[in-house]
Image 1 (cartoon, protein in one colour):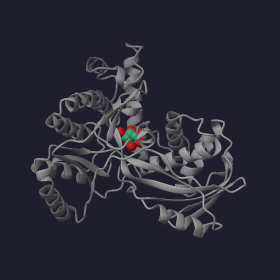
Image 2 (cartoon, rainbow, N blue to C red; image 1 turned 180 degrees about the vertical axis):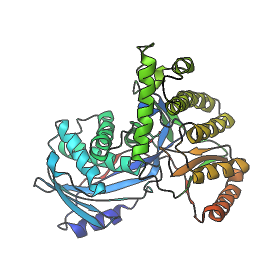
Image 3 (cartoon, protein in one colour; image 1 turned 90 degrees about the vertical axis):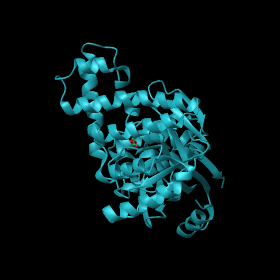
Image 4 (cartoon, rainbow, N blue to C red; image 1 turned 135 degrees about the vertical axis):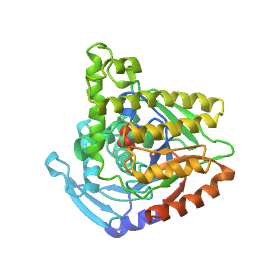
Length: 386
Ligand code: GLA
């Protein structure tokens, strides 16, 4: 992401002066999908792509925002009734409102932003956008008194209250807490986390973007979450301590078979298994056993496809190609319904796999997949103070 590019647009679209520049990344997730809102474990890392923005208080009560990528300009006030229509601007508005709810005296500002994390590809471009504004408003209007976890929660609350997606904490957490070269295992119940240096010798981590956008998937996402809550409510009748699916096991799930819908049962089965897979992967990483890591990734894909039903024919096809090319691990990443597969592949097999993926995907779907080599980068940060 180019600082000069953002700056030149900021100067052009406002009064010619400059402000402060901040950046926040998108994320990958090695394993642990749809576990965050179930109090389970996730294992994400920030990427070297994300959102960058310039911002300067303008001495008014109005936010003047320019999306460099969309070439769209929006103004809005800071009261609840001032919500802008443009969906990209609602993210910024939501972050302002959530900071205000936490006692921050947010003032009007001029801002321009741009991103290089692909939209709707499961790499959390929206969390990157939320985090970069939460981080900047904390720095500019609150002397950084809001802690990093709360900044992540500001982004999550923006999704819940202003976008309509009842997401978990993973994406915003990874965007704020990311550290170059490290994955982070987060326990979403206790919020304890641990950095894991990740540099598998002899392997590459690569994203294959199906270019199927998942942007309209929010109602399906919310439905999955509802299924999990239905099962928790049923289990609680006999096991009152169960607050999340994290607290449940397969025996408890068996007990409610027939009392919850078959669909809800399948969803919970996937989640309970997935939470264990994260811990298995952590153990495997400790001893450098990438075959186990890869095997768990394939299991996740299978569960997301057949039990949680958040895959699609394109992603299943990409997963099959990976298998046929002896890729060590492959799975749909993020919320699903489109976006990327994450692939752990031996370096010597990498080029053959990429060539084969491009060719056969094009032949089958008439689409060219995009390939992104994963570089694990840093979290939200100030780039230059104005
Ligand atoms: C989306 C949500 C996250 C998480 C993932 C699935 O990215 O924003 O909170 O639930 O899906 O793991």
